[in-house]
Length: 211
Image 1 (cartoon, one colour):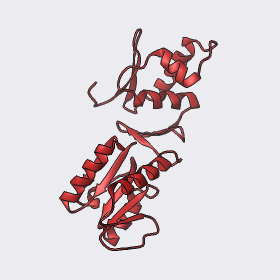
Image 2 (cartoon, one colour):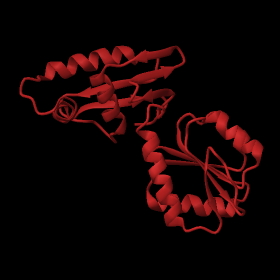
Image 3 (tube, one colour):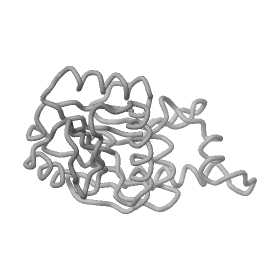
């Protein structure tokens, strides 16, 4: 899963929630803040968790991430059409289960996107958005980029051929090299590039990120 944004003015329940989510292993990145006004862009998050939010904070949340799942934690019962409300005290397993389900549904929707460095990548829409604009990717280019950005290191050519093209003897290495070449051209000015190693395969390089 991607990023989860937690907003709470009370540091203790906020830290406890971060620990619970971390222990559950449901997020690659958890962003915590005491004021949602400090968040300028939440387009790369998969869920918002608001602890005792004000009406203004709820309005702000709908602006920065209009289609992202929103969870409200409240000491009193309340009704919010665009959010899931959990009244305190509540069982962590029930909350985490609901959060996992909402995030999973969102990340399979056309609104889901992730940031690779400073470039926004939407695997389902097959688009890359960066400072100079948006470029469209083919099915294979999108699959290649998605596979490489999830990897911790170089991905062998055999793995790329198997996972992107399937087991097909007719698919040769030059087919992969051609797609990598075309994808590399589209990645110009995005801060992303590739390193090719004859033995290890291909590795995605993100500008500004240490290898």
